[in-house]
Image 1: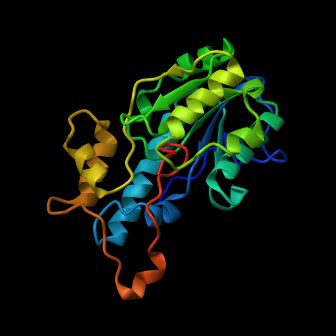
Image 2: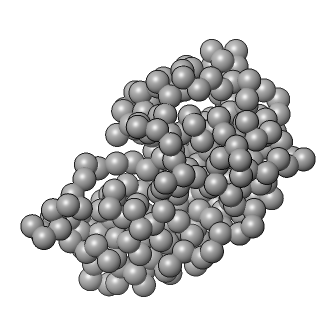
Length: 252
């Protein structure tokens, strides 16, 4: 099971997020592992392994952001407010800004190379007034969004084409207009949304630190075959359309 939240991690709510003397915060916006595995079938026909994979990615994300030295805000599950993904993410960002943070770095929980991000470099770009995006290799999604309070407008942000292939270009254009400066682009990094992407991750040398890699190998075992699972009739209620968890990949 995921480790307990540290005292630095609090839900994104104007009533509960404490104001820090540091004006940059990291916002982890995702589902908890017990929900994430239902959205992304990481292992074909094996729900238990899919959940354990989701837990491994979640813990890896927690460690990556805790190592940043910045305040960490976590918004997941019932803490998210809104009928659509865009509205929920916009509300979480608005809450963080309302709490007193001037710069927010939003990430999800399915980028296995999140530990490589230079958080201080991202914060420095934001301090200079330049928004930051971390694109996926296909440039239809993003694993990181860095935005300042002056660059954020809730309704326009929520109305972007989230979960579509046009998201990245629309988001970059929107931030360019708000900041009057093109976003700084980080190195492209993969996310993991389905069994095929998980299999590719496991084959790629150096894609994960030794600890998470060893844990995934233990979970998957030597004979695991990845692919999209076929839910049995008794588990029909678990079947859902493929979803790329927020905001790690924001395109469908």
